[in-house]
Length: 176
Image (cartoon, rainbow, N blue to C red; front, side, top):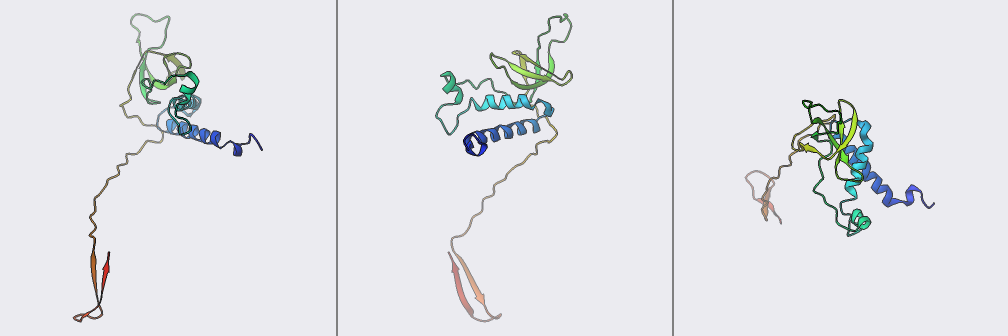
């Protein structure tokens, strides 16, 4: 039947990729699962700006007609010091708030942030990102080091088989 999930292999694969990205983003941060929608928006934003096997251009290039800039990409869920808009701010109030990066503006330059104290999402373009700080979530990522070891294998192995001790060799086996 046309339009069924089994007939839309490309779409189903893209949905699986998006779900895998969201799952990974949430698991590798210490953000609540309730903001999975923002993680999904960010995953779609990223996938629209990177190349695919299907086309030479990115989806963004096909839609807008120019190459996307990737300089503004940041690690999802990283700690951030951001300056939210506060119209009634006093002179000695703290100007920045500690929160987490969760996405990009839809129609302008800037970023979305999650404030865990107030449990709110706000948007601003002024922020300092701390992407190098290791942060742990519910499922802390393990360090895994794959060590390589060089082994030299001789080209010719000569095996001598004896039937009894102190007797002549029964046969010679050469393995190449």
